Image 1 (spheres, protein in one colour):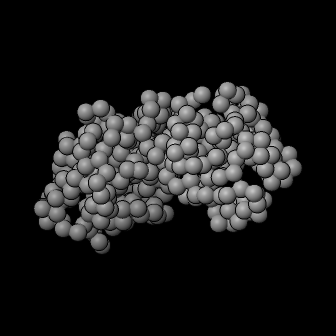
Image 2: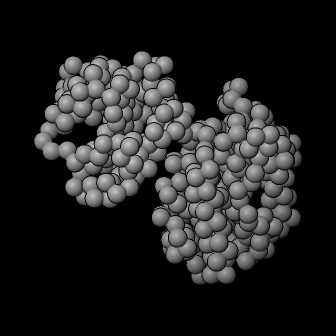
Length: 358
Ligand SMILES: [Mn+2]
């Protein structure tokens, strides 16, 4: 049995779940190793595990899913029949559902279809497994990151004053696909001039403004995301812009220097925040220092003032992305991804942070 299923069943036993009905694309990929956004899985404690795949996916599912772990089934007829049968043959009464992603409407249908089952929220059970990345997952994320970096370097010579923000975003996404990405990790951010003061600004169909150009983007490999941000300058940076850029960079380098297994997530945020606020930018860093990255581009743990007593653990992959945003003027952010290792940390990002003027 796969380690993931083994661990999942252990936690299910502890929680008193007889079965987990997994409906999110992330859970499907994580547990079965096969991507089907419309498939669903039933993992039982006392019986087997089932992967329900429709006609569009069944051939690939049979090829790619480990049959020692899952019985691969193309369901026919109404769900209450095939799901109900799987539950009754495994004597499953307490059935956990993915409350983080299942819609209210789907839950109501499930309740009607499975009147014998006690439906309970799965809570963090899958997230707690997913947070620690194994070697194969790190490999996917590193591959995605290399694609993103290569694409960024290929993009730079293509940027000129006639480019629009939407063109720059599209070009970067094209380069990532060309270099082997399955898709963009999220809507690519390419914001220039005044638009760069919005941390998650939307690219406009207007020519690049002089000043900062912030590019926040990621590639995906094997369903795993990368995430990076670089800020370059269109034209020349004046002294104030250089001061701001160097403050963001110093804040990031200080956090990167400190980050390692056992350190507190809160403290990592504070190290960067203190530098930024201490140099005259009080209140201008309005988001968290970082977040976990994996099958979703934002997952646990957060490096934030609200991280509580969560400490970094070996296996975590987190971003370190301080920024400074001056309303009505401009903004700047620099983001790397870090893998927390036993006793240390490894920066997964390999890309220049020198101030680039275009
Ligand atoms: Mn990020």
